[in-house]
Image (cartoon, rainbow, N blue to C red; front, side, top):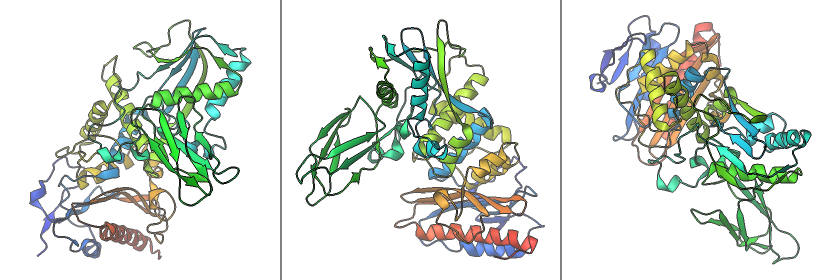
Length: 497
């Protein structure tokens, strides 16, 4: 028998223990048919060992209208990004932009990072109608305009805004080196990945042509690939080196998938140096690391700023929310942690996963959201150490909706049937569903908003953990919940779909 339990509204700060309910529903005025349809949508789980958590909040009233073990801590996968995104908005503000600075001290070129994950990101630059190398080319043009065509010193990179922790210690070993587990830096370019392509040229058996993006002088390409013949080329990277070996046969052009590069700062500096050389600016020194900014953020004399590249927070949120780009979420969390620590009085903070977690907990406490069971290991959800409840996710979304930055968070999420990670789901939902997906082996989560005619009407989270085999049955349950809520919005206004 299904146990019915009276559930608290969002505005209350009390938290129900997970053991106290199986399915809960707020008191009137909640239409009985909506409750029945939600119960039917969830139904009996396909596997007895599966764990579930769900929560739906009516944004018009603040009432929690439906729960299913909503206080059970579960692995969120990529819905963890909602914590990073919301915290970044709270700490940085909607008008914030990441700023990467190129300067000179009359001998060296100085590059000062701000944790911008969008620098050199192909999708962001394509939307602007420019190449990913455009920021470097603009800097080169400004250097030439100032008559600086030969730099006698070094390229000095300042990465102090973030702590030196490019990889999270709890990321799974098999993920490391993959594009979605790229190292996190204060200076980032091309999502900290290499795009390597081989093209057959000349007669069969001739060495293939190899192109690499971003252009970089630091790499060593060992080309053993041959044109023509049967089979496919292969790419091998020896860990801890910048050596990449191409082998096998290439009967046609073959782009390898993105390959993570171990040192984001060096990839950035090497790419800058290559573009400067192409634009006629010679560098005579080396690449080295040093702190340039003072603890209060100032640039000491005699430093002169050559250029500043800005990436608006809006662009970074969209890549994290719509496309589930892990690097972007990690930079959001660390940058929010840096801002929170400085605002709290630390004059020498460096953005880190720990400080990012502190900022998340501070936001939830301010919002009156219980934090029992919450574990913030990273910002992307790649770590299986992360944990949260469906109530925490839905309550965070409800709180964020009521803030001045709520519209920006909403528009940063994937729209069902339209774009991002929901492009192929819920195509008949008339764009009412805006949500963040989460998928790992044995994990399928979804959290976001269902829109009414005048904007978001429901905040929801539906989480599943611990099931064997494919996740399709659980995705279908999530989609059914979304359809029920979308239909409820339609019926309130007399609409049909």
